Image (cartoon, rainbow, N blue to C red; front, side):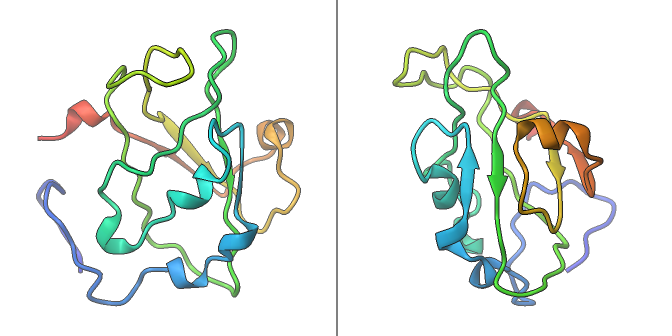
Length: 141
């Protein structure tokens, strides 16, 4: 379903059956710098749950470091990703259990394809397959 000339404050059903969740190798998904083990795996939701805020993914709290995450999502077969849904909370919307002041939504998402060897240093040195600059949650409505 294609949308032109309007905002995206409405839902699109997965009418085309385009969800790739069934092709994700969930047991091999991992996330570097996640605050809760396996929370990276838990955020890969079914299409009809994509706008829910729980479960969520937070980086480990370190006031001296950027809150970066590296999420590795392997697929069981070759796929083409056409859309991606990322839901973020407003800055400081709720506090963390770890003493943090709250959350900050991602500003940029970099996608790397066909890489098994990614860590933060390697990701800095490589050109991503795609880079997505996200609008803040305050942009809604």
